[in-house]
Length: 285
Image 1 (cartoon, helix red, strand yellow):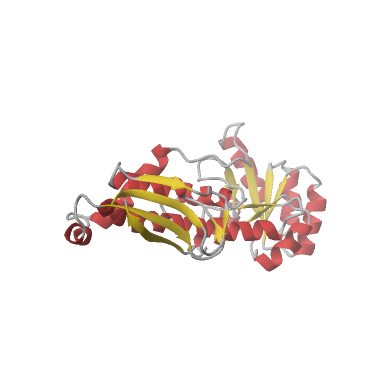
Image 2 (cartoon, one colour):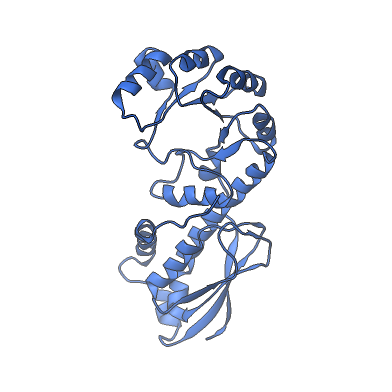
């Protein structure tokens, strides 16, 4: 899968807000007091632990928004694996600007690389099966586009981006509508022909009801591998099958072996640990 960069129009407001949060009304008072205005430096962005890189565009933009005179030379690319001590990028520019942008740049890069790293781990766990790993809407507010990009950098795929781009009928929709079939019928009557409809089911009985209504996809929630295997048999290729719930790296292979098309995992975005990346001063430039 080709990793397509996010448009600057999407990324720039997020980076600007992060920098404004840090700079406040007075700016970087430490660097302004300690570093001569005309001093220039070369710094190295270095991995402190193994992982997968994501977010270099975002990181570079943080430096450039603080000082357009900053130049980043990348030695690796998003989606690349790194090991402790690997040089990711070299950045040259006014020293004050480098120090002012450092934390925002590393916060974005570390967070997104952490997501890419755990995604790559669970993708590897299901290698050799037909299953793809997809993320969910369990993302950090305002950072969804970046976090879903990081999932792609780790070899995963994206589920729907938001409430507007696909119908996903969940348990509370079903309860309020009065049943799986009725919820699906209402959805079909309420959206256009281009909108895909997926329904979450908890039991094989609900799955059979959903398949009678010809849905596009079924979310098989918290089912055991044996139940998933039977669910795949019932669907028989008539809809996309997605397993969700109880997905851990140790369980992923068994879930994938059931024959499902997708495995959705929320924790790759909401609970991924930050990848430790540092910025080391090299020399005056």
